[in-house]
Amino acid sequence: EAAVTQSPRNKVTVTGGNVTLSCRQTNSHNYMYWYRQDTGHGLRLIHYSYGAGNLQIGDVPDGYKATRTTQEDFFLLLELASPSQTSLYFCASRDSSNSDYTFGSGTRLLVI
Amino acid sequence: GEQVEQRPPHLSVREGDSAFITCTYTDPNSYYFFWYKQEPGASLQLLMKVFSSTEINEGQGFTVLLNKKDKRLSLNLTAAHPGDSAAYFCAVRFLSSGSWQLIFGSGTQLTVMP
Image 1 (cartoon, helix red, strand yellow):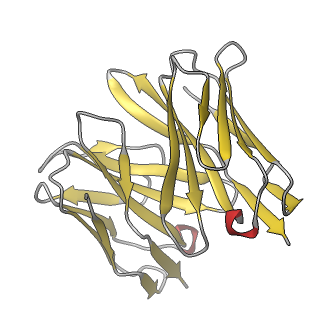
Image 2 (image 1 turned 45 degrees about the horizontal axis):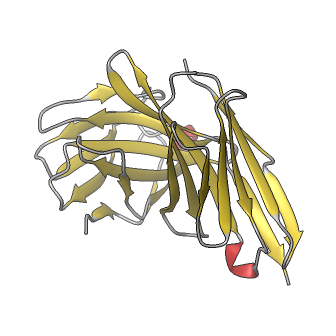
C-alpha cells in the first residue's frame, strides 16, 4: 500500500524564519503535491511535481518554493515565513496511470 | 477556471437521520469526482470516486449522486451515526491546459448527535 510520510507533524517558527517541510512517498508515484488547508477554503494547491527535478506552480504559490530531489522526496520551503502561512499542510502523491491520490498525515505550521 | 462550491459549511443531525451535502462545479469537462472524509487531526480518507459516466454510487451507509446536467455532486449519509462526525470534502478533477487538476470544495463539518 502506498504510504506518504510527512515531517515534522508540528512546527512553530517566528516571522521571517526559514522552514522546510518534508514529504516522502514509498510507492514510486510520479506525481507529488503540496496543499495547504485553511478553515473555509478546503485544500488549495501550492506546488506539484511530476518527477525528480520537475516543479509546477499551483494555485497559491506565493511565498513558497518546492524541490523534488528524488522520485520519493518532495520538500516545501518557506524562506521568509509569515503569519499568513500558518496552516495545515498536506502532501499527496499519485501515479500517472490513475486518479487516486494518497495523502500524508499533515504538518501543522504556526508562524508567530 | 473550475470553481467548486460546497454547502452547507456546517451540518448537525440526530443519530439515525440523513445528512445531505452538495457541491456544484462549473467546468462541464470535469471527469472525476471525489468525496473525502477527514476526522479530527487526521488526513483525508477517500470515501468514493465517481466517474462522469456514473450517476449513482452506493457505499457503506452513504450514496453519492452526480447530476451532470446541473453540475452537482451530492453525498447523502443515510442513518448517520456519531462515528460519521467529521469534515467532508468534495473534489473535482478536470483537464486544464493538458494537465489534470484537482479542486476541493471548502468542506462541511458534520456533527451527528446521539
